[in-house]
Length: 409
Ligand SMILES: [Zn+2]
Image (tube, rainbow, N blue to C red):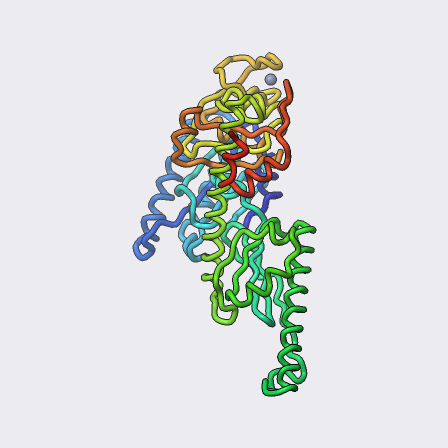
């Protein structure tokens, strides 16, 4: 099954006093013909390494045994991972707490990895989900409409509408007065059909079934359909591709839609990076650098979080209150209890980010972003010395990243 936000939240809430949370990510290697064997060898190596690390731990014999059983179960599965086609896979397991979850993912993970820790390792998932809207894909012609969900690379058909042909339909021919009337009726019916689909889309957006959508149709239909869209529905349209509803395959639909989403995401990421950096420079709603970002997170100020793709930094986390500090201190500055070192602060803050539904972007190869420390946040508000940014400005930046500079300067 495909992972949903609610399940990720549940995984983010998991914690154990001992490292018994096993997270396994499988990314199929290419080319496919010889890859199966290599994949299996890699998984065996990872498992062996994890088991060795497990052996070196002392105490908690029972927990170690249950972790061993999880790793061995993953190992047994490794032979079948290829059977679900070109999907990647994530497994989260903790036998001690009765957790075993398997999910299919689009094959865009950074690699095959295995982690044993006190929490599940969720960065690869956060990466995938990063600002991924609930997406509808609509295919339409004069008589039919097919509506799909696109979620993490998975295309699911939600609805299929077919307008019944009028009784006299096309058999009338198109000659003369009768023909003209028949043509008008066919046009009316098509218009009605477009209106029905537009209304259905409006409802889906209002109910939150979709947040954005993509249109696939032939140009001639697009020019008739788009004028029927209420403004609100039109604004949620990310883009369109040319498609003949009768002949297009599922794979083609998914690929074309995916390309549009990726372009939109990359424009949007660019827009948000620009906005955050300019807001940080003017001491507005942007902060940069780990220390400030951590503080803003704890204050509940963060709306959107930006990480450099390779960002990694040490920090400490309080064993009592969960406070995360960029200074490596032995005792928590908030409650005075001992702290624990965290190797990857980007991973350690994810539970909070996921729970708070904070939009997260991973930024790749951006020298300006690199200069400010590869971590930044856009704030909903600033607790001290509030300097509000209008909702209008924000929505402009997000929807039309290209126009951002005008507002940002
Ligand atoms: Zn504390």
